[in-house]
Length: 546
Image (cartoon, rainbow, N blue to C red; front, side):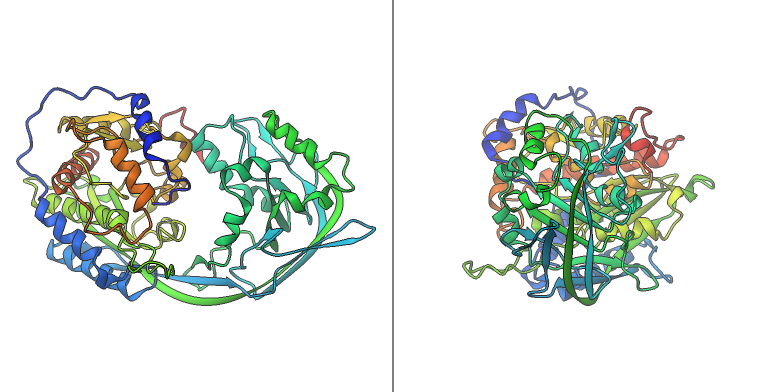
């Protein structure tokens, strides 16, 4: 799972008070069919072993992980649901790298040209489709660069950006709800491109500097970017008219506003007061240049189906997803261990999915709807494998009634509650509460809404295609009085997340994994056998995405 900000353990503990737990039903009888702790352990220890070298997208280790998952699907008798009668959906990717010394940013004021230094004043990334880019165009300030009828936003009102470079401040208004705001924030490029912009400059603000200093972003700037390729081999670049992009430190941005009616400091003062800056012409032009190098790789999604029993409903699918990739080997030479094993992220989720698949195949009755199990690649690269499948599904997209996503359950304590991201947006919330209640587990509110996690895992590309989705996380309360669930959860993110120590040597509670798997199985059972397919709630922002 992709988390922007690691949350401190103490802060998480205090959030537990505000989780808003719902009372679970009284003790209920446990079903005869249950997950097996030893099986979960065997899956996790293999997938997170050193031999797989962190399962980076396109690596030998991830290929081995995919083969392992295919073997398990075959052993369970699941039908292949990949391409050409196989379990594999092979996805091509382009890895793009900015050519050293090629990035340039010049501001033309009419009287002078100001050259900015890459890495110190501005950052940029490579192009996914062009070896070289150069664009010179007038510049327009467009506030946050957001458009939303629902929230009364139009940062392009009364300005023409066709053929121009737009300047927008980073982030989004604090008044926006976190999940909805995160979705709009991810759409900034689309908003600019659809209005004819040829470049985007994102302005690093003083407020952003307090959260993530510009120098910290610069440390990660030279990492390659990855995008998926369509079946014709073209990169997934929807808006090729955007010829250049840059992230500009406010301390170097004054020349941009030298001919403008509104000064840069006035814009920042508006932001600080919570006001919405209006768009205006900057009356300067900018030249953006870069050169990019490209390498093509491939990596598989793995898909399998358990056909449903109902003559009609078997043509609909409950989709389980879990990403099998991780971040590979660390380049930090100060550490002795260089393998990012990804035990919790996300060998645990894949293990839960495999055990859930076994439970479905061994259930006394086959579910009415079909169950589609999808092991996804390139989540850590930006939800790319899921996005590819959402664009090129191996079953009709409209026949997928719901997505149950399994991403990074932190199985380090005996949890007493779960958090279900997406549960407030669709009827799946009721399904999750009922399933968890069968195991005397409460459903709690999202204790960290500022993270907008609903938009940050593999279910999100399906949400954008109209599929109701949910995924569970272990909550911050523990059954045992001597365990502080929130503290354990926070310590994992502070000390182990995306580090070599996220390994099978952690004190993994496989019995907690059994409960977690049983709940997710019950969720799928309920969706598969309900006469009605899940539906978005009428007031959900995600019910009518473009």
